[in-house]
Image 1 (spheres, rainbow, N blue to C red):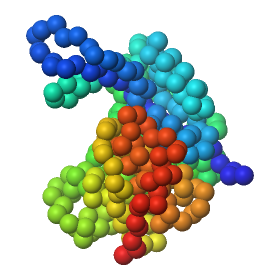
Image 2: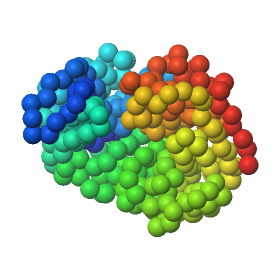
Image 3: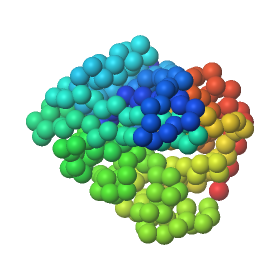
Image 4: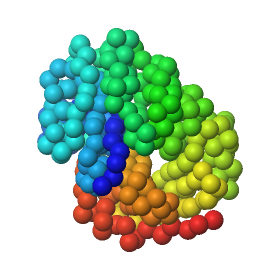
Length: 309
C-alpha cells in the first residue's frame, strides 16, 4: 500500500458553461443548440485524472455558493474527497461559446481574504506529512498573490512533501527556490521566462536546465503536437511523441499529462514509463470531450515512444 496522501489545490475553480450556437451573432438573440456544465480548474482536472488512475486524493482550494456545491458534488461522484474552504460569494462561471469561432468569457471569481487563505494553510500545517504530494495548479484568485504560492511551496519543503507546480511565469519562478518536485511549463512558457523564442529541442533542453539551476528538480516541457521532454534531477533527458487521434478539446490536456506522469512515478519510480503514461493521459484528454477516461488512456499508452537522450 502506498503510504502517502495526495492533495490538489485550485485557488480559483470554475463551472464552465459550454454552449453550442450554430451562428453566433453579437448584439442579437442567439439560441443554444445544446449546453453542458463542467467542473473546471487545473487542480480539479488533476484530481479527476488521479482518481481515474486509481489514486484517491483530496481536492482543496476555495469555493462558494451553488456553483461551489456543484463542483464538490461532481468530485464526490468521481470518488475525489473535497476539502475546500468556503468563501463569501459564488464560484465563478466561465462561458465557452462554440460556434463558427470559439469565444470564451472567463469570470474573475470571488475574493479570497487573508483569513480564508490562513484557514486553507492551516489544513496543510495540521495534516501534511513527509512524502505527501501537493499539486498546486492554476493562477491566483482575487485577493491572493505570489505569497500564497510561496507559502505552500515553503511548507512542502519544510515537511519533505513533493510539491508539483503548474502555473504562470511569475508565480512559477518565485517558487523555484523551494525546490518543487515537478514543474510543467510548455515550450512557449519556458521561452517567455528567459525572454527567448525556442526553436528546437536542444534550446528547450538548454533553458530547462537553467530552471533546474534555479531550483526545480524535475521538469516536463510539453510541446503540443511534438510531444514532450522530461529532464530529471539526476541529469537524464527523455522525449516522447504523441499517439494518433483527433483533438476534440485541448482544455485540461496539460493538467492530465502532469497527473498521469506523477501518478505513474509514485507507482513505479520509473521516469521513462511515467513520461509515456503522462503523454498518453494528456493526449487522451485532448481526444475527449472532457477529462480522459481510464480505458482510453490505457489504449493509447502503447502508441507512445519514449527515447532517452
